[in-house]
Image 1 (cartoon, helix red, strand yellow):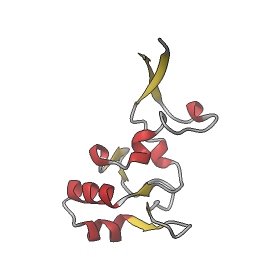
Image 2: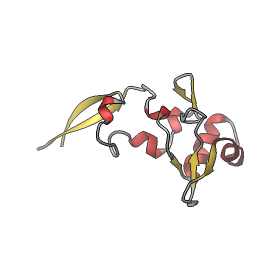
Image 3: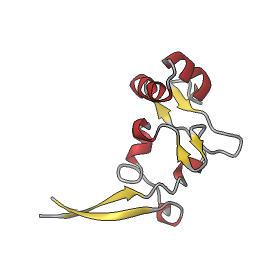
Length: 110
């Protein structure tokens, strides 16, 4: 038996204010577009851009580096946000992330 720590998002939105590429798939685009009442093409045009490596799409950033889908400290597509967003900080993180982002540790027993 091992004890693992799983972090629950506290919706601090600090990760949404962190500039970078937030990769989105066609399936994620379809889901987010539906949540916003848009077609996939409308969503793609308004909220995505070509990745720097030119191998897919990423969500656009606002002028200040925040995610284009962040409005008034709330995600416009929280229930359908991309896997990359859902996975932080449990499946990817970087050294020092706890000093920047809020998440509540929850112990799970395997």
